Length: 83
Image (cartoon, rainbow, N blue to C red; front, side, top):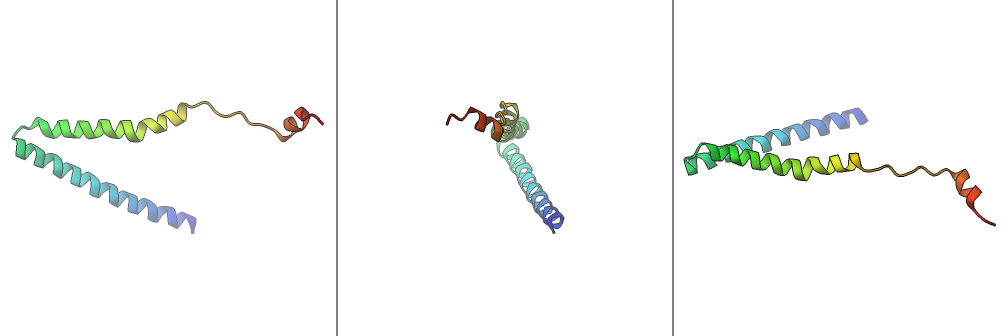
């Protein structure tokens, strides 16, 4: 049951990713056609890439590099407790 759910979620995410990617490519091509400058399309893609790195990937890197919280045992709490 759980495996099937992950497969269905993965398929939906892949479809959404392909739809968004296709629309981004169309937007970039339209920007190049409107401005009649071929490089504006690539500037648009680079800007989207930088924003994606900053707002999506960088938080994951910060979480990965964060120091771990120390593990506290129950016995340590009992030993340090004063009656």
